Length: 163
View 1: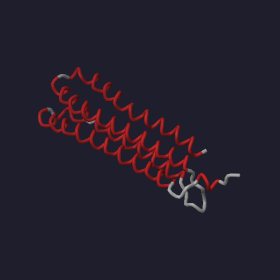
View 2 (view 1 turned 90 degrees about the vertical axis):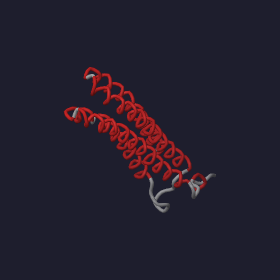
View 3 (view 1 turned 120 degrees about the vertical axis):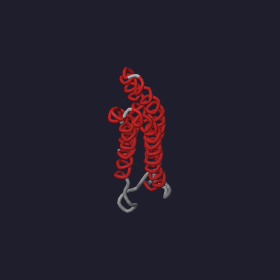
View 4 (view 1 turned 60 degrees about the vertical axis):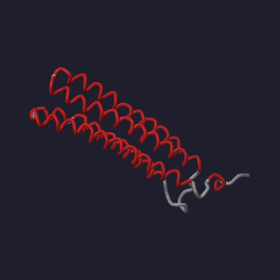
């Protein structure tokens, strides 16, 4: 007969903590890159057309949402982890939580990269031609949805690990 301790090696919580770290690290790198890259374009627009700055902030807001996705997953993973006397943390849960963190973190990195590049070019193009605004927002949404896909997969994996 196998014991629950057989499935709970001492290093298993490390994998869950790595999932928390990867979610926050990669998600925030993506959000920071998107904010910085699109912020450069906004600064360029602001020097010539200061009336367009508020509408040009959309890529910065969308980049910030990427970090919120990562934070939500990191908090959910942390909520499932308890000290060893209270809970036996299995290797399966460790790998599932690692997958959760990598899923939301790496898709957040990709989404932030896409939002940054589109945001920078889009707000500069918007300065010259106002009809580009709707197209820019649509492309930004397609970039943002990459991070949302990672969040959805992470939430599904987290429900599997908790059970």
